[in-house]
Image 1 (cartoon, rainbow, N blue to C red):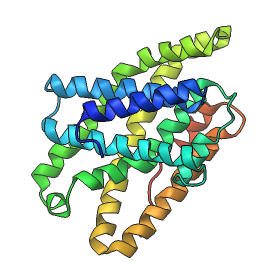
Image 2 (tube, rainbow, N blue to C red):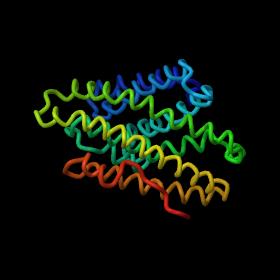
Image 3 (cartoon, rainbow, N blue to C red):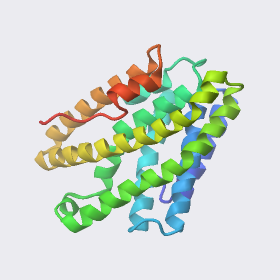
Image 4 (cartoon, helix red, strand yellow):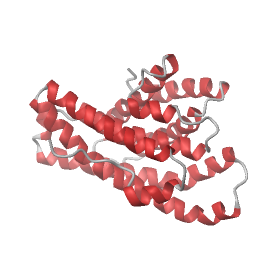
Length: 247
């Protein structure tokens, strides 16, 4: 496992080079994620978080879950977790923006709660003041992502080629909706993190069952994005995130 954001960024660059060589559409999400990870590192350096060392640790743990899924998929497409199998298995000729949305959905809904449980111990969950700081830093990530939406839209335009007139007209709305989806899903992530923590305290078997539930819910949401039709409309109706039901 990487120890720092710089190390995980280096690993991302290595994987991106291979994906670009192979013309693998997974390159679209990884390129976006690489730039986002660098933006989070810049925000850490700028002092925008209450606990910068913790945010950096969390960012590394989060990224490693994706990179491990990517490496597993490259060896055996059946080896990655189910949400990632669906995301990586999308049609190669699908628009780059769809590949990015699929990757974002799998990573946020399935990986993010796991990463938070991985960097917040059961004892820390019992400290209301510390958990409040963790939740505030979790919310501050939204600001970093929101600042990236316009730039990433430009990057997707560059790799997607000319857009239809209607696509250009919808761009401002799409950007606003993307920002809203990210915030909505991350609020649900915090609920799922608390649910996984409670399951962890109850025992390994309970945790595995709850994680399996999250995998099913996340997979269904990723699969929904692959069905024909206006993706943003479906997201507007059903939301971007998922929520674990009560145990």
